[in-house]
Length: 256
Image (cartoon, rainbow, N blue to C red; front, side, top):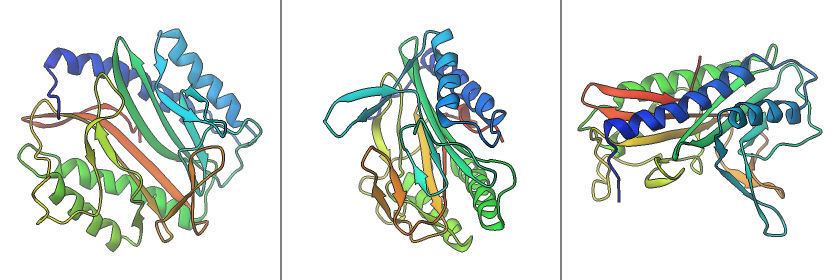
């Protein structure tokens, strides 16, 4: 069931979203080659801790034990991975940052990909493709529009741009919980109308996608997260936003 949010509730989500955006701003300004991913994770923890926000990502380790983490920090062909304490940034890397928190009882979530130093042409094109895809997406998100049509249009746009959507990376509703109804999948057809979500004022979503230059398939990593099946680079974007009669109101996410 999709839970519509009041204006007051949306403002609470925005306050959580401001912290998510602050994390992205901090990390984007800290991408120096030689920096350990564990150092970036500490910067993220500090921002949330200072504002009494709690991490909302849950990792299940090999023994089945669950633990909370503030962010996934993944490099190049990986996505949604826990922090490798020994891994360091190198010039030419792409960092995929996904982070979320619960603040004053409400959640926000946001992902974006960043170049470390100068990246090669393929990775630069991929980063530009992510930005352009989200530009297209935000124009399509208007009240009365069906998600199936949005998904189809974006899928065609990505394909013509020479990339592939990663099917496992999907959006979702968000509010009191990190993941609420509905799931916003990709590669849908406009004719698949039975279960299509129609945009309405008061809906709040974290719309999320992954792009790659490869085949689009992922394989799980032993300690959590995924890597691309063929080793191709990938990027990851996600915005938390509210639907309004005037269009979307971005509550957390991209800063570039």
